[in-house]
Image 1 (cartoon, rainbow, N blue to C red):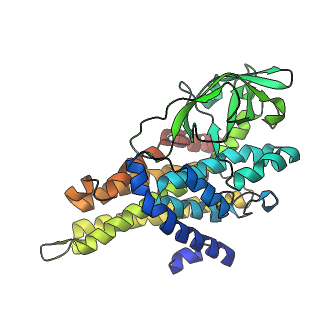
Image 2: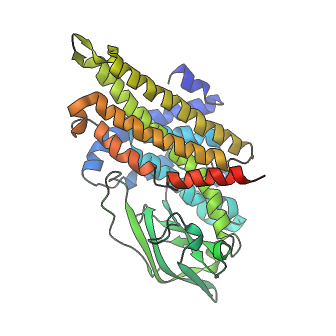
Image 3: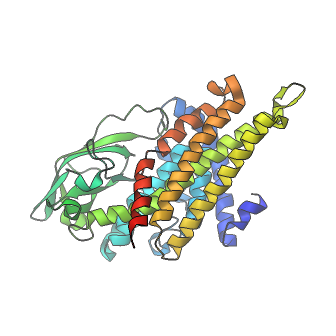
Length: 383
C-alpha cells in the first residue's frame, strides 16, 4: 500500500484491514476472476470466505458480528475487492444494501435473530426493489403484499436482482396500499418461502460470475414478524438504503478504474514503438494522465460523501454525485485503456476488454446516471 492510500485510512486498524483485503484478493480473487467470468461460473462460495474473514459486515455493529467500521473504511475495502474482481466487490455492496433495512429499521429481536448470519457470511442477501415495468420509477411498483392473519401474501415479480436465485434471503419492497410511495412496505423473505422462485439468470454483457435474475412471488406467505419498520415506511427505507448503496457502486467504479489504469500503465511502459516505450509518447502519456486524474478525483468524491454519512450529516446529493462521476469516469477509463492496448485491447487475451464490459453496468445499477442527475437537481431546488 502506498503512502497516499495509507493516509486516507483513519486508524491503524483500518490500515491492517485493507492490507488483509489486498492479501485475500490477490490470493483468492484475482486468480479466479477471468476464468469464472468466461465460464459464467458463480462466485457464490467466495462470499462465505469473505464473511468468515470479517469482510462482509464491516459497517454493521460488532454486537451482531459486524466490523463496526466507518463507511469510509468499508468503501475502500469494496474498492479493493472490485479492483481484483468486480462481481465480488459489487456483490458485497449489494449484500450490504440488503442488510440495511434490517440493521437500521429492524427491532432488537429481528436483528438478533437474522443479522449475525448475514454479516458473518453464512447467509447471502439480495435486494428486491426494481420490477420489469418499474426500475427507476420505484414509487409506483406493483408487487403487492396483502395482510392475511399473521402473514403477508405477496404476488408480483422483481427484476434485475443481484444474487437472484442464489441468495438465502431477500429484502422485498411491496405495495400494501394504493397511496403511492406511502403505500410500500419492507419485508425480509426467506429464500425457501413457498411461492418464491427465481427465473433463469439473465445473459449479460459482463458480470457473468454474478447471478442476476427475476424473483417471482406467487401467493408467497411471508410472516408479519418479518416486516421491517412500519407498514407504509418501505419507500423511505429503500431511499435511505440507496444513498448508501450508491456509494458502494462509486467505490466499485473506482476499483475498476484502478484495475484498467494499472493495466494500461504496465503495458505502456513495456510496449515499444518508434524506438521508445509508448508511455513516453504524448498521445499515450496525456491519456494516462487524464485517467490518473479521474481516478484521484473519483476516490476523493466517494470518500467525502462517506465522511458526511459517518458524521450523521445529509449526504444524498454527494452520494448521487459520487456515483455519477465515478461510474462515468470508469467507463471512460476503460475505453481509454483499450485504446492504449490498441488491437490487443480488443482481444480476450488481456483483461481490459472485460473492464470495458463491466464498467458499463455501473452507469445503470442503483439508479441510472440520468436518475442521479435528477436526484442532484431535486436537492438543489430545495430552499
